[in-house]
Length: 196
Image (cartoon, rainbow, N blue to C red; front, side, top):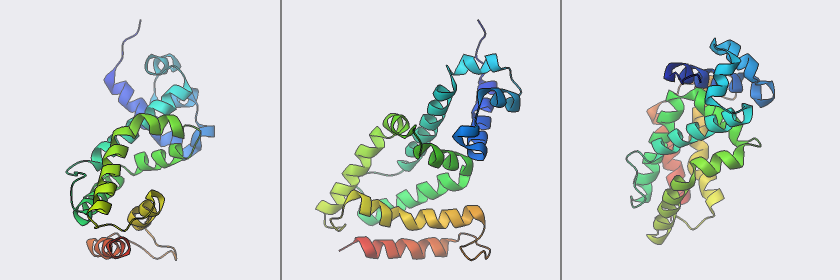
């Protein structure tokens, strides 16, 4: 039986992420992945049972690392403004450091793999964020809105700015570089919108 090589396994993961982002799920295949990774197809089956297993494991791993980063320095008992600021910092740092992983996560979380990936990677984070949300409402630091409205207002502006940064331009095509000033301005508007 062939043994696992951590270096090859990491290379395969990186190539899988690149290919999923570039080609989409429909254009992604094990034979092509093997060729792009410089390994045999048989090597892929040491790490994954099939294409679905590879895609699910990739999504779960990205999700777990993303949600782990979101709780870095964050506590659900923080004041609303302090906690939301920490979430913005953590989300921005991850998105700027790992743009391909974020693009892959977006693709997979809007696919038929969504449920299995979210169920495996989101459970602890969901509890943490629910506690933060409920604590902020209890302390009257957050308007009592639905979680969907909260998420849209709390993070929508940040993700729009990060998209502009990733593309290097705004909607009109003018060059764009994300600055602390723009981030702070958007954050303060979000705080005004969500606090009593």
